[in-house]
Amino acid sequence: MMASRMRSPLGRAIGLGSAKEGVDHWWAQRITAIALVPLSLWFVASVIGLAGADIETVQNWVGLPLPAILLVLLIIATFYHAALGLQVVIEDYIHTELARLGLVVAVRLLSFGFAVAGIFAVLSIALGSTS
Image (cartoon, rainbow, N blue to C red; front, top):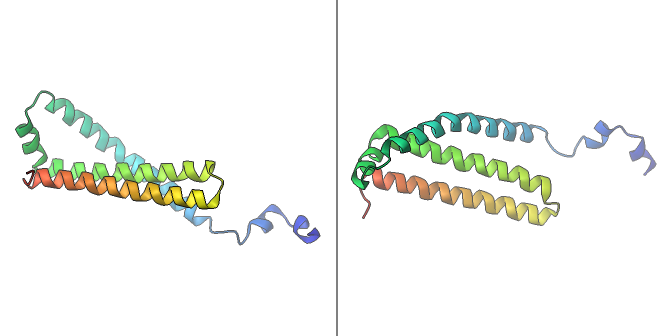
């Protein structure tokens, strides 16, 4: 007990896990945030441009390669960014290890599920199988 109190904070922290994981998480969140800026601006401008259009016009627009690709990228970046952000909130405010793990897993699965559903919807419209 006495020896552990004599160690420096760095000495006590060594062996408690890799600091690299946090850096990777931080970078991933920043990269997705940067990607979301032009994608979101494009999406808002596109929605404004399509305001008042009929469903066929919107379906034809989604069926074009560039809008379909950009919509899929927007969906991926949005749900990945959200999962990363929610994970940080969970890790900061949930102190029970089992609850923290369960919530992080649930957030990841829900984010993945919503992303897959969104991508499926875009591809269904783009490929014309909306029946």
